Amino acid sequence: MNDTGSPGTVTAAGSATPAAGPLRAACELARMTNCGYCWARPQQPCTAGPGGAAGYHLARFARAARRGLITPAGFDAALAAAGDGMYSGAAVVFDVPGARAEDHARGAS
Image (tube, rainbow, N blue to C red; front, side, top):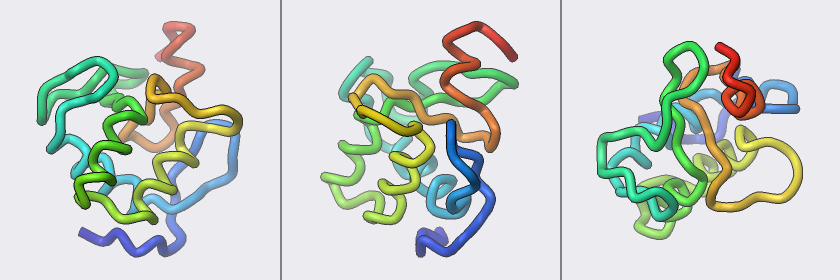
């Protein structure tokens, strides 16, 4: 997995384009844990998002980081994808570039 923090093309909600590699790798590795927010089991997404994107709560990335599964660069990419502002474990990060939590909340696809 390339989780080096090098520039890429992930579209984060409300921001330009942070690194795609670290977010993609972080999503894959975060799937290995259960979610500490909704208790989705390993390998299952927390929610389905717009365009078939799999969504994962930020709590799941935090759990994966604590267990050493994702690097600080991967966790930073997840935070960037969660959007600007206050973060909580309920914030959702999608594994498809361009999928946004705001669209999911409104039911858009």
